[in-house]
Length: 109
Image 1 (spheres, rainbow, N blue to C red):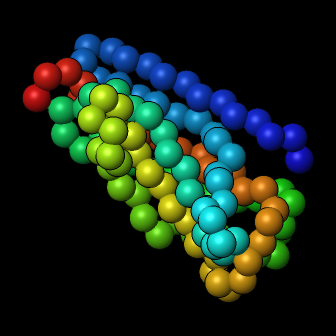
Image 2: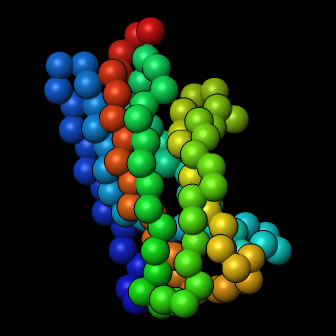
């Protein structure tokens, strides 16, 4: 499967929508976990976020989203961190993608 990343951003009247698909990364020594960090706009409150994880390479080892967190480790760049884990807690080095949609008001709180 070719590594494809796509992303769409739309802002209307102070409301921001971000959607797309990105390849998830494998954290060090944890092939049963996938993570993704997505930089986001300065939402005035926590955005509504949905995410789905899938792989065309590995139809037999599903991953499920276990956490969606706001990542404020970099004070200049707010991001969303999505973490998924294998249902079977079995390691895999296959490529997994995350489709996501985020929406909410932007601007100064």
